[in-house]
Image 1 (cartoon, helix red, strand yellow):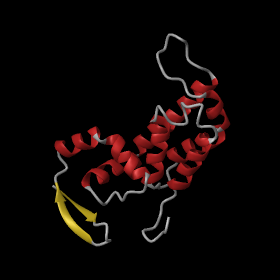
Image 2 (cartoon, helix red, strand yellow):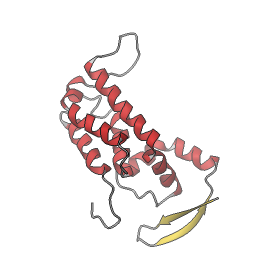
Image 3 (cartoon, helix red, strand yellow):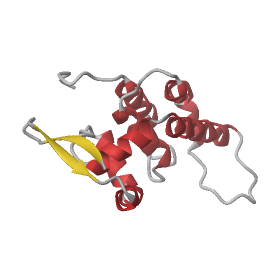
Image 4 (cartoon, rainbow, N blue to C red):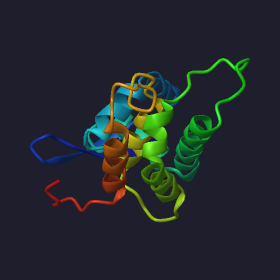
Amino acid sequence: MDVLLLTRPDGTSLVSCERRGRALRLAVRLRRWHLDRALASGASPDAQAELSLRARELIGRSSRAAIAREIERVLRDARWPPAPARMCVLPCRRQVLAAEPVLRELARMLIAPAPVDVRGVAQARMLVRDGAGPVYSPAAEGRLQELAQAAIDALAPRLPDDDD
């Protein structure tokens, strides 16, 4: 059994014993999108055991590298679309190519050995995984570059008393 430090919304802390067994890992796996959205919005990973475990997964080197590879795949598919026989949703070429420098910087920061804030990692993952988002939607003109820059900005680790 692990001991997790969980915080209440009013800022007070408590020590809680949580089992990190299969049930918790399964809950995190099933609620991954919801947990990523909460973390991307700034939810504290210390607020719940599920958020804590998901945050740990996201900031791990393998998860960050996988997100960077997805960004590179999106860029490659925008530049050289795959053969028609491959069943996949293609990224919006115009949007992706316009945001290419920012997307490359985001991928570079994800694989860098420097510490990162989970909020930025979650934002980057949602950016490339959201099939209705600006990577795949031509209607979201300019939004991809804006969201990629926001993810870069959010990657910088924050101190607990930062006001962001």
